[in-house]
Length: 528
Ligand SMILES: [Ca+2]
Image 1: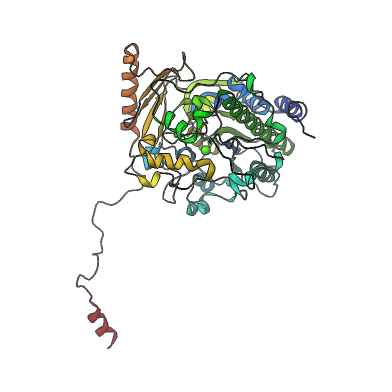
Image 2: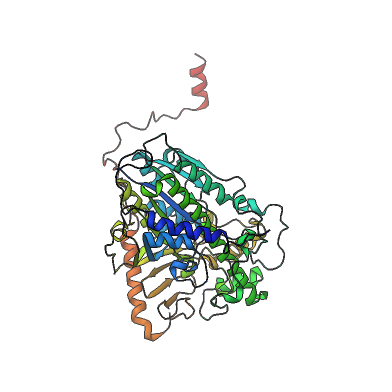
């Protein structure tokens, strides 16, 4: 029998979350569950993949049920305007862990991760005395960086594709819709959750811990466990941004053509959105399981929990699915960021612009660990404790890659039924993934795209970014102000030197004996 999570499981979750609200103390005081007194908080980053901020109840979604996420927002601080540094996994996560924009070290692909000579949040925490656990997908550290940065790690076998192995390959348009999966506990994210709970239960150490839960949901394929799959009716959803809008970048039409999406009716895009929302509710259920385990182990009292995601998803907006490496729509950049920190003020809603990599500075601040590199992330602890943010701040996001950096492209002929056409399109038409950069203020989105269509939107009047004002004379001065600020940001943030220094003198030892050693000279020496 199918269990409808709204009628049973979610109600239990809501009851549990409501209990947590009253049970959560306002500060870390006295003995913790392990007997560790006071000290630095444990840290958990519950990091979903491809979660749009506007898909959550606490961010104003009128349909989606996210009782557990909403609960931690009530207990902590919700950042209303957080944007990622890049709309793609690897690049976004490299920024998250360094506080660097992609332009600082060229982390703008799925194939260049943080190497041992680059800084990362987790190595700082490990060097600072934390046990650091990484459970879930990677997409951020080069393999040789793991040992120095992490205490332990676990990647569920089979990865993202695991639950869909054995299902028939989809034919027809690339909608990325798959059938439901049978068991909510058989998905990789559930295995990640179990590993995290094991850390919560440990009693044998006084070291604080940091757990990075690098989850897969609600990443496509659009498919939810069967008892979530029918939570939302397509007819009940708010309108999607329509396809065929004027002055949109070329990849809108190119993707729709290449994927066969021009044949897909609006009703099917709404079904995609409904399934995506079901996946969001599944992620919320996982968080509820974690919250219950934190309460059971007493870890709710000494653990700072941050909920966020690496970037968003089209989920049917503009007649598109998934995401695109050269795209900068707000549905891809605007991510949730909620922090429930012991001692923090409950119910904060911070309206100012913040950036995803602020998580790095916030965790370092909480852990009392200093970064040893110049970065641009800002600690969010002032807002978490009820203070004001920076009302003049803007958020910057970069995307894309150009033909002179073929190493960044997703390889042609690979990617299978879901991503094969994506790979081929960017290789056949590299102008569709050309480099671009954006600045967002609370009112505007401005996207500079030298190799394609630039964009300007007034999000207060047009939150779905449907009317491109780039050529509108009435918005000329706003555009010029944003352009100047974007250039200034590049001037200010690009190419910072490392902290260690090279001596200005030539090295003390000359290179070597300058006389060349030919084979006959070598042989004569060997024959003595
Ligand atoms: Ca991702």
